[in-house]
Amino acid sequence: MEATMLVKEAMTGEVRWYSPDTPIQEVARVMRDEGIGCVPIGENDRLVGMITDRDITCRGVAAGERLEALTCRAVMSPGIFFCFEDQTLEQALGQMQERQVHHLPVLNRQKRMTGLISLGDIALKGESSILAPLAKIAARDAERHVQAA
Image 1: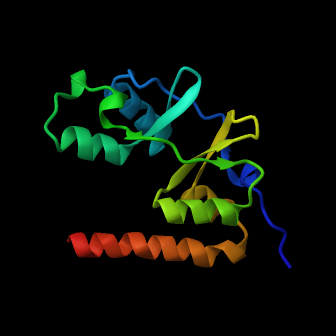
Image 2: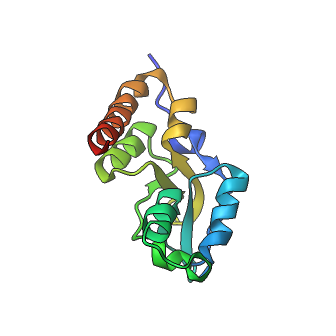
Image 3: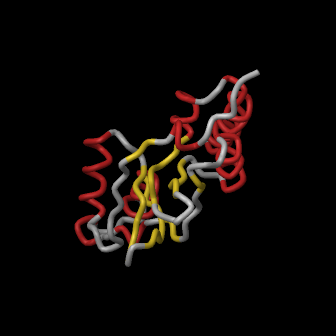
């Protein structure tokens, strides 16, 4: 029987957050240079949203906005969903599936951000028992792409 893995065992630590007033071009460069797809957005020591490469593309570029004038606030997904570092990967994956997101900020019980967990982190580091629920999320996403084509 496999042990139940906790989020803190699979998450990516040392995640930086950015101000809502940060230019999206700056955040896009960080995403490109670090090979990441999202960053948390914080204001007054609180998480206020997330910005993904998809947010930049769909809300900024596709809308025809002047990119040099756009900030994270203009394109970020407002509100924040998160998990705690002492939750199981299964619990975090359930939240991701329910909210239809691929990343969650990870907080400690004092509500301080300690990292970020992604579907990729779970796929790479998770126990084999979690692969079936992960495949279900991937299949759902693949089905959306087929329908959009």
